[in-house]
Image (cartoon, rainbow, N blue to C red; front, side, top):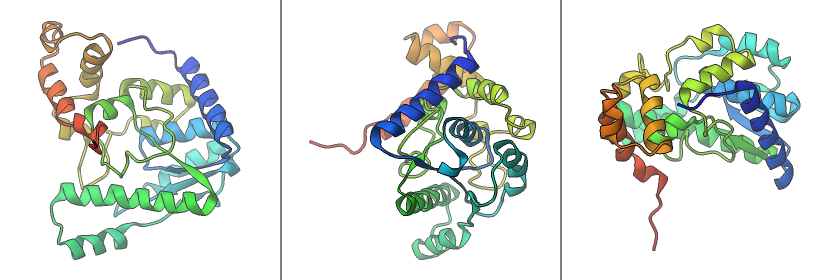
Length: 250
């Protein structure tokens, strides 16, 4: 993978955020904070780019809340609960599960992701704000997102950065260790982890994806470099590639 300069990247993202919002005449942003590394890094970048009063931070738990973990972040941002809102989505999701007779955990996870984005966009409408996404490049290339759910956004500050580099950026920005060291998870069901679903690590995925998409190496060439899951990772990505192309039109 290419070398990564966290300070330079931080400055580029902050400039991008400020320039883009100024160009479209918006001042306020909504962000869904999950308790994980991606949403925390995105939040820290927003807080460096804009006054904290311009940000609305939503924490939208189903059953497991990470509200207590926000306290050191709140201290760092010098914010108050006036900008941090905890809204349980359990009653909304359970109503949809009952109405549509959904029991499959993957379908329930999709409903949860879409319910969170409905909540974010309702706040955006109320406040004349944009919704900030928190997707990284690894998730984007793997298609590891719910269409019209966590993938929905108006602006994406870290979508061009691989997951491995997100941790480096988080360290540079001062993200708390408990978040830096937590196993990445979408929090869609008990015990769910990203890498458990993949069957490979983010570290290996980043190396393989960067060699395939950025360096234009073949799967066979990547395998000769010692990445035994290269085929599996690229097949995972290709299987979800359609998500980047819908809706299909004439």
